[in-house]
Length: 378
Ligand SMILES: Nc1ncnc2c1ncn2[C@@H]1O[C@H](COP(=O)(O)OP(=O)(O)O)[C@@H](O)[C@H]1O
Ligand SMILES: [Mg+2]
Image 1 (cartoon, rainbow, N blue to C red):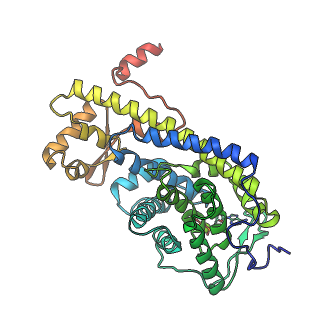
Image 2: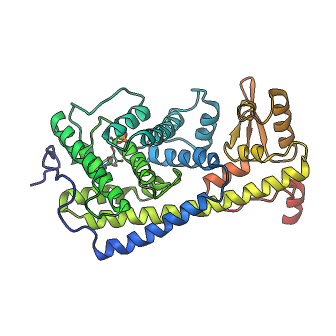
Image 3: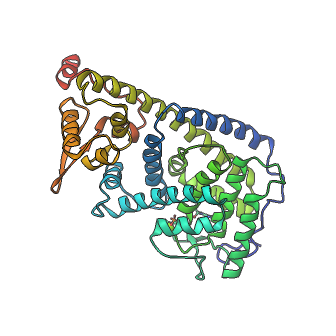
């Protein structure tokens, strides 16, 4: 029988033999599907998709990396994303690579459907190593006790065969499993195969988002699943393990459906607040700086919480000199703060960064200057 210390070469192929869409699973699946469509609708209220595409994957990158104990701060990560300086902390650099890997995956699925080849590309970008399906043995240990909890299959031929079964299941339309259930099944199987020396967790979580986009359940990479997984990391590991040890698909599928439901709701509310901040910023900039205001400029302020003069130029909003003036004026009216980074200035939309990186969905109105709001408090 299953021994965590021996390579699990008997890992069953897909599809799962048992009836996995039980009543309990279907109940959570219904809630997950409707939360996901709310998320999709929320995304459509933001006219410039760049606002969501650039920011939410960075949040996902941070938490997905943190699940693997690669830690950075949101501030460092957003700053690194803007500067691409290679001077940031290692965790921030990995986070930026993670987002690049996600973008890469979305480009690849436009050209050809998702396969384990896509997974290899994703993992190469995340790790920065030109790796392939592993020849070396690996195992997963309990971080606290050091005890081996799982030994994935071993032998390149075995891994390749399991991966081609994984590919076949991605493309199999004959079973009538819903794509959301299939995503969860594929994620378990991918982690159980554990095809790479490292990066399997992060690659698998990027595959989830790419798969939902491919299947048309999402238009943008806004599902921020790692937020839930990080908060319930022990449950995530246990649920994966129980599929192996007990064939407990029900527990795993309920876990994943709850993850989709919870993070879809969180993100849909966050996008609603982003929309309000977009409106509030447009209103304030239009009133205070009518000659400078444009929708494109305000969209940019919500695309990059850390903005550089070069970003304004790249977006075709103004030439360098004018761009610099625009950003200084935005500092003057309290929308941005400037900071020196070497010889350059970088501009921070602190209100926005706070909104993105906390649970709160409120922000101070621009009409209240710091003096006035202090007056209110006294
Ligand atoms: N019992 C288990 N069975 C299969 N996969 C597991 C199990 N426990 C954890 N995992 C997966 O293994 C991942 C860690 O593998 P690893 O290759 O180190 O990924 P990364 O480099 O992204 O950290 C976890 O994020 C999880 O997805
Ligand atoms: Mg790892």
